[in-house]
Image (cartoon, one colour):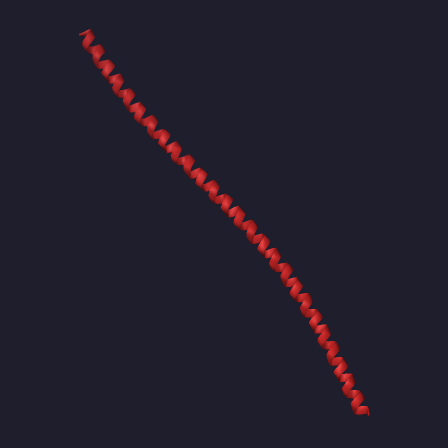
Length: 97
């Protein structure tokens, strides 16, 4: 009878240990789920900031291109004004002669 009681006690202990391990596993799974959710949230934040940075970079690039175009236009206009100035100077020289 003692052997049977001892066997049942071991079975009960094993069942209790299994329940505790299952509870620990469940806790670990919930912690992993929480951590995964946090990581996903951070990744979405990083993605959003990356997209914003990319759009800002594109805006800066467009602004630089516009400035370069404006400088080019100013240079062309200055060259034309210089030619007009030379033409006027030549005409004045002819008028004075």
